[in-house]
Length: 95
Image 1 (cartoon, helix red, strand yellow):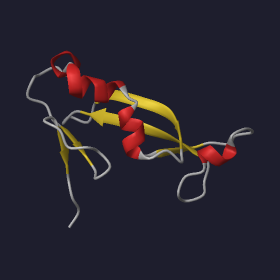
Image 2 (cartoon, rainbow, N blue to C red):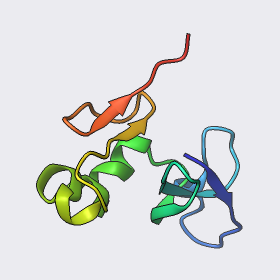
Image 3 (cartoon, helix red, strand yellow):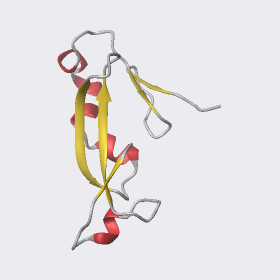
């Protein structure tokens, strides 16, 4: 997930990412034509990708109401190793 650099006055430790820079996480989903279809931002830079996904409306949609979330019923989400496998979440591995 990309991290958006930020400068904070309070709760600074929570916003330090693994590279020791202050940041905010952004979870984004885009279609094959590179159009964003979902964005979720605001978790501190120290938050793990799996934690952010767990608290997103995207996770709820994947689990319960996928047909209402995507335009077509045959969509899948591709994520990295931080995402849990499910019927509609595919995790890719780097060789």
